[in-house]
Length: 307
Image 1 (tube, rainbow, N blue to C red):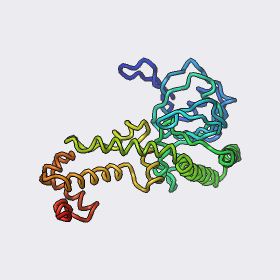
Image 2 (image 1 turned 45 degrees about the horizontal axis):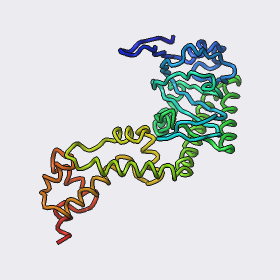
Image 3 (image 1 turned 90 degrees about the horizontal axis):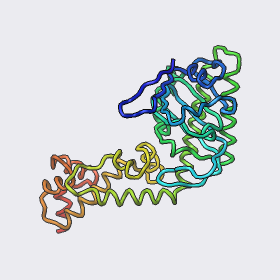
Image 4 (image 1 turned 60 degrees about the vertical axis):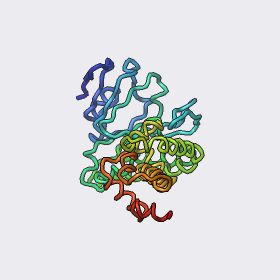
């Protein structure tokens, strides 16, 4: 049964749905045909705007498919106009805030419980689909062609859910979910590439921040710190960078560190220990090991190459 809880200092309730059946009851929809999966059309659901602003947590996965977006949508660090439809993903136990307008509930949502995919390869591999960890503002925006593909996949899932259950039903349903996720991976990769100009600005901001942040004697910045500065989630940042540069966020941090170390080694007489401290390392051995791993030279060998 869904439950309410109040966290300290927060007045809006946290509404927790432990099962898909509980959610269907809350939306005044029929009991789901399958206990571990359901696809709903929000045109058929009764949404109470009295819950607007309340925080919601689901014990299952949610994939939302909106046919169109109206007006400006927050996208990464800025606001952009989109007329296309899009997909948004939510993993179990993430907390989201319920929209305060009816337009926030347009389109379709597919829910499936983790128990549905247990015992299947997808159950072990679903973590590779990083978009379940993205923020709402990092939705997947679809072209008309992509919308048709996603709509056909949602139709196939809907047909299977309403089909007579047999020994193959769960196998087919899980394979359809995996196909939807694989297509979503492909479309996200396309989004990173087609919006390269936008993301070049993000990469430039990241590099400038790392350049100014590293070398102050404070600990190295973590990926979480970097993503907070840029206004995007850590997983989205890493996937974006991997797609455009081939390097993860952590690798970019190390790259900036090594470039800063090279500059200090070639333009100062500081000892390796002093340089390590300035770059945020507690132990100079850790700095030396990372430097050699990245450059194939020890710090002193690198400095000696300038003599």
